[in-house]
Image (cartoon, rainbow, N blue to C red; front, top):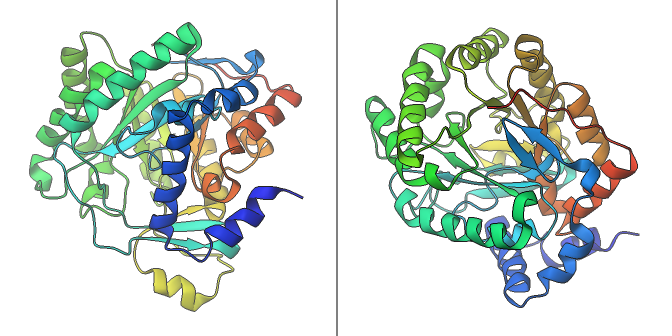
Length: 363
């Protein structure tokens, strides 16, 4: 019998979800601060056979932590000790903002799902950048060439009008790109008004061009650039984004963000209704996320990196995503249900299955 699910039901299931997340994250950071994380890291470190290369960057494992868990770069070193091949920090905005009013994070435990309307709560790019720089230096010293990778996910400040979004993203890229192994433009959260309108090819093109220009100038190098899309896009729009990514020479696409849909849930409808608006993540997203991945793969092949996220829980799930065209796979919601040894368990399962990682053309 696994211990953590029992612990979760006793310690966290009854608690406000955001408070439980904060306590859990603080505990992970405290273990690191006490030096005990090095003990965990000895058995959590991915097997050498799992190393994979995408857009010219080596990842210790194809499995990483999606944006949303560490929104402000406060726990990168601690999370790296748990076995994640990469940690994607964010979403970070150009200006600091408190996010949406609480409560804003809810669990649907029977569905192994979460509904959030956090609203990109973070300290802003200027404050977060030094934390990431410090963490990156620490990972370099500890792991050398095979360190976990740091991705940075940027989004639009809520107070900034949509017509000024390009400059807002430029501000974030200017501060954060020098510290990023890769940079993600998030235009797919349902919790910032109007943000998803930026996913259309005609509005997305100037935004991505601006972020590419600003990130290269501030970092003094070509920073791998990816775009994160929603599962709720029409198939024709998915194809358009894929073709745009190829045309602009992006390094990759992350598919998918949370969904505004509520189809197929087994939770009590009253409990679902009580959550209100927000993005749904977790197991119910698995089918659509896989469908979007396969559609993207049919358009881009191995010309760029596809990062699959949504409903990922097990090594078998990751194996399926790799077979469907992903080079990298991310998880988040299952981390809340499976606990701190989740990544280590997944990596052991991948190694035991003899996973052959799928590389992409170098940047």
